[in-house]
Length: 289
Image (cartoon, rainbow, N blue to C red; front, side, top):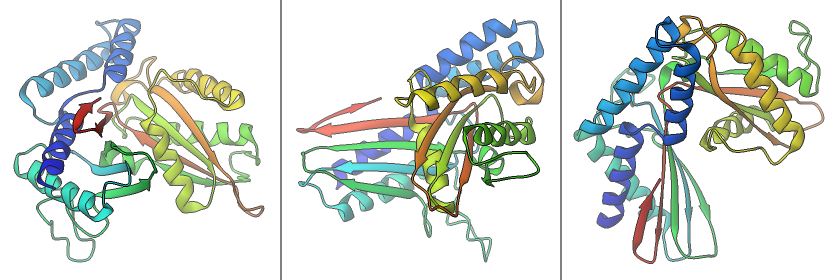
């Protein structure tokens, strides 16, 4: 378990302090489009400068290091309890080393646990497979972007949104418009269509593990992702709400089967400090991405 804990500590450090390459590239491209003399362009360049310094010094990209969301796929040689214990140990260690800010607060007493461990925190999703090995994806989901997430129940007469992809489109546009600059944009949008109230939000967050430059295998959803990316960037909200052409860096959509009576659309928003990392442990060798 000690060895696992050390690997998980490094995973947390990387997630907290290193901006993923696809996110960095998207922001660099956006800064060029905006122009460095504009408010939007200069804001993006400051964000990138901040991310570079964070990586150099192994300090958090953002002071709000967010909720730790782990997705764990493990083979038959591992025990779930051992993995969980190692994740908790690594989480407490990462907090003590200031890779994480203490963020676990009891909702009744208001007391902070001081180590990012509490009832339901960190969130760990386990999936057991038949092949040997261990792979983990980690996302740090900040509170500001979490606050501007939204869920819609279709049909929605206020939006003129029916139970179809056009209705989904209207929900996404409304959610981002309502967020304005409060989610620390430019953000990336995860949409979960279907399921129940809980699983729709899970689906929307799982979409945020996708690379910005990937392509949805469903042609209809791929077309909607492209359209929403264009339309959301036409809202003019821009980085941190300062205006500009870059309101979102990407839109990712997933679906789950639903009950006939229900049609939920969940919108998860993640800020420019788009912190995710992954690791694979196989045959005693570990790799990070």
